[in-house]
Length: 111
Image (cartoon, rainbow, N blue to C red; front, side):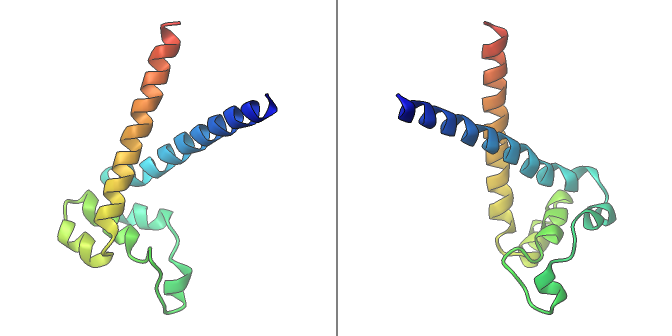
């Protein structure tokens, strides 16, 4: 009985975290389309690895997302090779979060 309650609470908590992270990461998708590039670059700090002269797996991702927002997919790929894949996955995740949230809202409205 206690294990079932724990499992139910854990699943509910994971769904809540997924929804919050889905909408927050969804903002990373929307921002390059609605804000000018200087404003986008001002929102995100310079990577500490790049500031130290190195690089990390996400280096160039802000530039890549800004380029995706302006339709420059080749430039985005040049800025970070994984940018198109990450952008696509974030779009799919946001679509899933929005669909789940809407289904829950409709179900809640009908009860």
